[in-house]
Image (cartoon, rainbow, N blue to C red; front, side, top):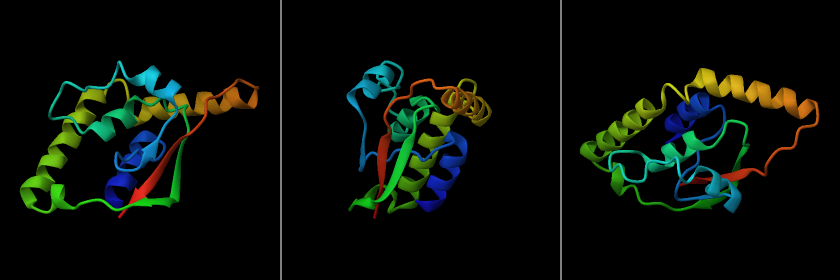
Length: 130
């Protein structure tokens, strides 16, 4: 899981959310819910949601928020590779609009705007799973 989180943090410019343990403001969900791919069965839903969160929205990784999760989805090689295919499919769906390059440019722009006094939104909080 550590490798996944490090790689996705590089892509997203912030920590990815993890479905077993995260919270977001209702306003954020209302903003992104129409863009997530809920009807596609081969999409990694946590990653899809992470990619649809604007890079200007701060995701806070709170290491003290911990929950236990089952390792069953990745306990076999077939389960592990299924999740990897879902991740690859999800990234492929977003590569043109949500590439690391586009996200970094948006983040730099947002930071510039923050220095000039533009208002922001509250953070999305994500914790770790064990």
